[in-house]
Length: 148
Image 1 (cartoon, rainbow, N blue to C red):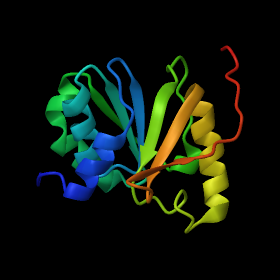
Image 2: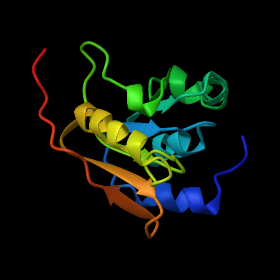
Image 3: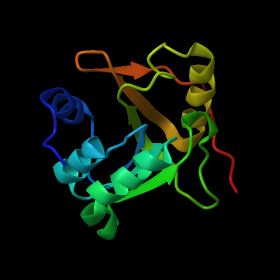
Image 4: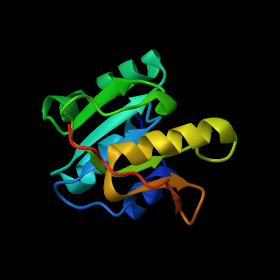
């Protein structure tokens, strides 16, 4: 996999990451940003979701070492259909780079995505997208997690 672009490196560096976090990357193929998050923090778990099976296969190939180490996992699902699996812990932070449902290109899908992401984050969890300097936080609807 090619090295991280300067733009993507700046975005990853700007994320407020801490050891022990669970991070959700939306639309993350081919896996470069997720790998960079793991390399930057070490003690972190990144779940990368992407609607494209081809994209998920690419992430699995490019991040085989991080996946084998238990630091990265993938799921083939559209962001507007994403839900936590039974017993899955919520995420501390979510981010997306060039995702049309979150950058204003698809406003209706964006509403559904924001609702799904809010439900998958811890209370107070944040969603960041590209397009700020270098990031901007996206306002999420209030969501309270119901115990299973």
